[in-house]
Amino acid sequence: MANPKGISNSPSSRKVPLNRDVVLSTALELVDTEGLDGLTMRRLGQELERDPMSLYRYAANRAALLDGITELVLNELAIFADDPDWQAQLRRIAHDLRLLALRHPNVVPLLVTRPLSTPLGLRPLGTLRPLEQILGLLIGAGFSPADALHVYRAYYGFLYGHILNELQEYIVDPEENVALLRLGLHRLPVTEFPTLRALGPVLADYDGDAELDQGLTLLLSGLAAQLAG
Amino acid sequence: MANPKGISNSPSSRKVPLNRDVVLSTALELVDTEGLDGLTMRRLGQELERDPMSLYRYAANRAALLDGITELVLNELAIFADDPDWQAQLRRIAHDLRLLALRHPNVVPLLVTRPLSTPLGLRPLGTLRPLEQILGLLIGAGFSPADALHVYRAYYGFLYGHILNELQEYIVDPEENVALLRLGLHRLPVTEFPTLRALGPVLADYDGDAELDQGLTLLLSGLAAQLAG
DNA sequence: ACCTGAACACCGTTCAAGT
DNA sequence: ACCTGAACACCGTTCAAGT
Image 1 (tube, each protein chain N blue to C red):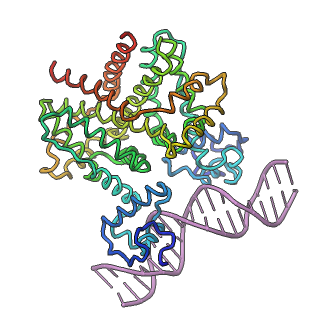
Image 2 (tube, each protein chain N blue to C red; image 1 turned 90 degrees about the horizontal axis):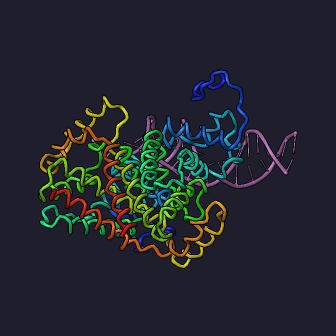
Image 3 (cartoon, helix red, strand yellow; image 1 turned 135 degrees about the horizontal axis):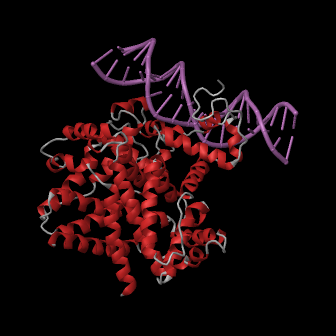
């Protein structure tokens, strides 16, 4: 048992040859299973059966590692910039990103937070590609470049806002969900939080997919009107 | 010189008596000036001229300290749940929160991220108060409780989406802004990022306040229609 | 030139020892 | 009962020593 605490599937694994992709996907796996704090250079080195220092060949430092993870995740998002139906395309992308976020909830803080500390032009290219492609899609649909940017901002803002919303109310274990919610709500002072306490049942069955879709319909029709007008 | 690296205003300060508010506001000051990573128990202890261990009387651990900071910041947000003009109220709140975010940009990751790791009912009351109050506002305006929740989600999602958007493109030093933007954009491969590169000038003069207000107009009119229909 | 790992300068937090 | 600070079990990263 060479790797007793390992999360790797192959129990008798020999040392895998390292490259950036292996390092990043193992890092992502670690984040998925143990959270962001679980990803340390030392722990990742352990997972790959290497000296932690050897990781610095594939990422300049821990921050670069985090950037690499966001790139890796965003690369899973397919965008067809030449789709003639831009509304359908934006709608599908939104649903895909939602599912991606639900699959990697621990990465969402990274997606949302990393760009705050790096000027746009200096970000990892993988995180800028969706922006470029969506701008292309919109310009192809007839928006001026400047308008495309505004539309992108509205779309992106709405989309990430929704994802944050949904994840805030999402709890992994659906069994625990109701219990924890009740427990929590019960704790709130009745006099100060009457509404919130009364909303317990409604809060419990949040249909994120439907809510996202309704919002998209509203947003897209608004944006389409802007294009026509 | 008892406190050479201190950020306190009074150079000859004696030890301030500790209480939760003093601890939290000093922590906030530290986050504002040195970023989230700058806030460590040891550094905060230094700032307050106390043993770091003494802080544990006012926050159970570092996570609780971070929660306290978000509460402190959100407490600055005034909400009048009995305003008969709910649209005007939501509009003002949005602008106020935007300004709050610009005043404490380093706290925004906390606002956005902390709720992801705590079930709603177990969050610090200070972070739930805005939710309760806005629900009250909407119900007072005629929305059913369930509808009020949906409206809140749309509003909150849009608002935080906008703030993240704006902060992502915001750079502290306006002089450096153009330069850094140019530098960054110039770095991008022309073939892969033609649109983004061409948008440099447009990106440079993002008017966050106007953009927020336009979005609000769209959103609020949509929501008002929902109330009427 | 590349790789290794000891060492440094930090962390948050526990807990025994003091009052 | 409360407060203090030494000690523990970690961090990311530097850099000297090896190859």
